[in-house]
Image 1 (cartoon, rainbow, N blue to C red):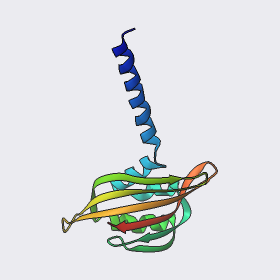
Image 2 (cartoon, helix red, strand yellow; image 1 turned 90 degrees about the horizontal axis):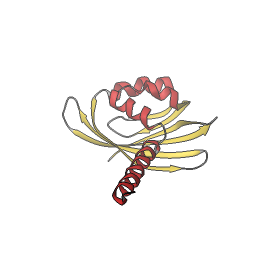
Image 3 (cartoon, rainbow, N blue to C red; image 1 turned 135 degrees about the vertical axis):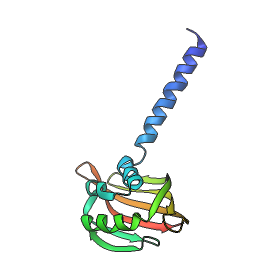
Length: 141
């Protein structure tokens, strides 16, 4: 068999496996990104505890312990002032029943046109084989 063909096949398979692994790298990544891109955090109801603790710095300025429905309602209003320009997953720490992961956002204020750099940190716990957000932290960077 041609060595070039074998080498090409091995490289292609390694790239495919690494792409699939990258897609699985962050918990609930697809739902979180979809919520951010659409500006509708209703999907958080499926991936969060019934009550979540929230500590967001400006420009969102939301702090407290909320039923998830109330958080979604309040945060949708606050987030609607922004347009998402870029999402970048930045870190993850995963243990058996706990996970912390974060993503960086570049947002544009729809009125002022100012750019905002923001980091969301998701604290998650595993219950009944499902990962659920129980604490959300937001930092302006």
